[in-house]
Length: 223
Image (cartoon, rainbow, N blue to C red):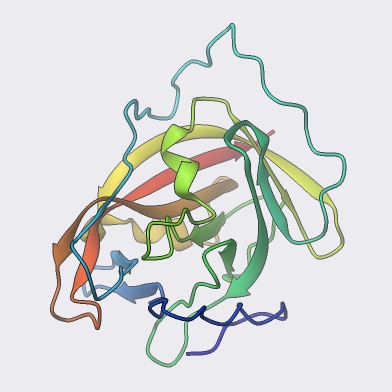
């Protein structure tokens, strides 16, 4: 499947590297969402990091926390979390004919196009990215498991306007339990970041034969 959005095509495979598999988001009959980040088909199963200290909405921010300065040079369509050393281009992606959402190269992230824009007064902005490239190289959202309450998250839109969010929760979800509300166009405005975590488990339905067991999910509220 081809990359969505108007950004440059992902870099070609280097010699000897296995092809990357793409994110598949499938609506379940009960209304939930199944999110798969598949790993390389060869080699032993590997695991992805999970939060050591997950937190829920309402968790207090460490009064002694000192956050990194906000970026002053954020280009259009960019995600930045300076405290986690995260900076990635944002491409857009919706559902294709097979109800699949395609992720770009692992050093980029994808913004689900449900009509909600960064800075909207209601609805959820869902941004998803790979935890790794299937070859143990860190993906754009590898550090998501290190998020702390109140961590500033910055995103910019097509015009370069920057919007600030603060981390409100950090949770693990089983792949079959990612709420459909994360794709909602209504409700309180928020940003949701999703990547994979946990051990890899066999899944013969995928070309790789494996999938990560869980999703690492951060929700964030506008500043």
